[in-house]
Length: 240
Image 1 (spheres, rainbow, N blue to C red):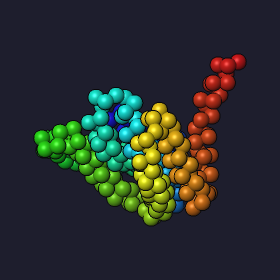
Image 2 (image 1 turned 30 degrees about the vertical axis):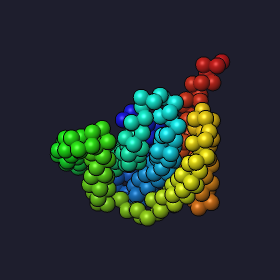
Image 3 (image 1 turned 90 degrees about the vertical axis):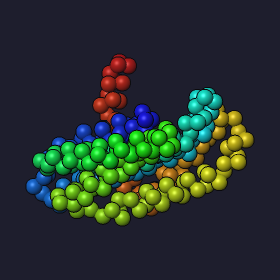
């Protein structure tokens, strides 16, 4: 669960801490607010998809390094990828709705998620154990996303196709060759297979996005670079 929330803490929180004030400032300007929301969601989707690929495709090697006692958790770990993808997006939609003075929609979403999660987790845990708990968490996240993104349409305009199409292509274009190499990974020592697989996933995913969304990728890099500046400044100051 903590690993599944890394994209929220590493990507979602830093990005939305910057964009939240922008959402609030632009709430009366639908066009500019739409652009700001699309830019924030675009960063979260593209970086989130990369995190998800890294989590799900390296799970076999990662679990091996943790120890044999963790092998039964591999399927659960991989199922949490849906939660990993959707949680930061739900956070983005929730922050937008709060910024435009409609926090009750976020609260309503959480209430609906709770109503669905409680019976789902009881039933699925009884049926599938810890795997069922992961499925229940995925269902809860998906329900929240559908509700929140439906209501964001009242305040912003954006294309779901543009938001998700090329990242989805990059995700599939990365996952397929990595999975086809499964026999090769299995023959390697996990200490070697893990870094090689991480490198291949990163290179394939970024290359596909660079070829299809170069300007979007440059924009994402600029946002990440700007977010990193305070930390870099503190590091340099500490070194001095």
